[in-house]
Length: 194
Image (cartoon, rainbow, N blue to C red; front, top):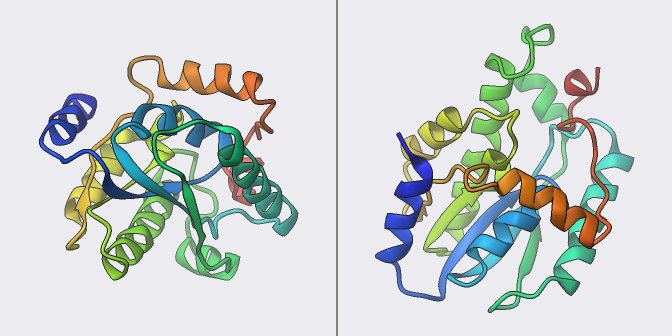
């Protein structure tokens, strides 16, 4: 499935200025996605990442996103919502999966946890769409991310995406340099840090 093409088809049928709740994990991943979607949607970022094990790292990423959106030009102002930060929820969910390799079942469950919460918040706040920046990373399985999003029942529509397409990841690196963004070298959990 070409999720990038599917997203373009969705956007063509969507009124400009529709609302989007965009789950974000960090400023670098959000950069190229905001550049791509900022002309079409009124975007609210949703920073929900209980997988980030260390509070200092969590705070650093959140601060960087807040700083970035104050300087990055988009058609509509960008808002941000912070989800609950409870790493114990992540650890409980991943019991028995501690030794899985990256991109394995533990990661699937983590994508699912964050997307389900994004969908819940999107529906609760009457957003037209929800999606995530996770598919920008070459280390994330876009098929899984889109499959999870597609299977979530919500009044808000899931916006399909594979943001790494069309040099999305490359563009995020360029924007990170241009805006001097902090780029971490792991997803966030203690297992990916190892």
